Length: 284
Image (cartoon, rainbow, N blue to C red; front, side, top):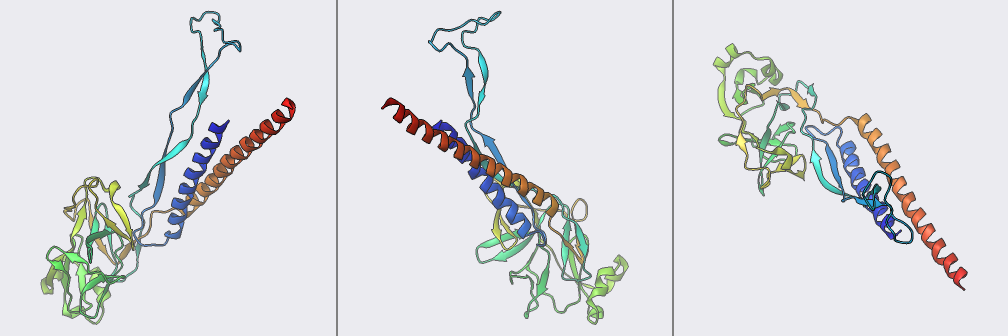
């Protein structure tokens, strides 16, 4: 009977972690470049239930030589295996803002932080007072040659991640978004965005503020060859890959599973109290 208390409690703990992941997904449904998390669980080893006589004498079922045949399995609980991040592509939304850059395909923008290089899919950038391209948190965006400095709000990013600037477009930076290759003759090459990818990105660790940090399991990052499977799009942002309707339905399922495990514990507690009280009174 005590085993049932632990089984129900383990189920409640796992559902709490499920609810935390779902709540975090819903809280970041409008965050640019956010990738949703899902929990992966695994069951403890099951116990085989065998049938035998009450007096301890084995019974041979007709046509069987098994003295204690299996009549079922008894679950012993569940535990959280890992929190897995789904890196599916989010929807691309056009903003006509030249500082909004999205990635179509695999890869991450590289930013410089006091703790070292970090990686993000959030391409909503700004230009600070020093002409440095930064994230909304003020972290420098890195190119192949280091931090990216722009003279004016007149830069263009092509599909290969190359950054150009042209003084002719200083009056209307949005015109850069629609520039064609034959217009590049009057532009000045600045740098190429440093886009990194990893051999096993599922093991990247979230650090907050849309940043990721590599781990020994993810392996070292390698620079992505842009223009083929991965492209950069200026004037677009990548929405999160969270479907709020799916997350809400899943949250209802988690709440019901939590309540079911709670009922298991309450039932076991009630039966244990009844057994102790009535058995004690009967023996008196």
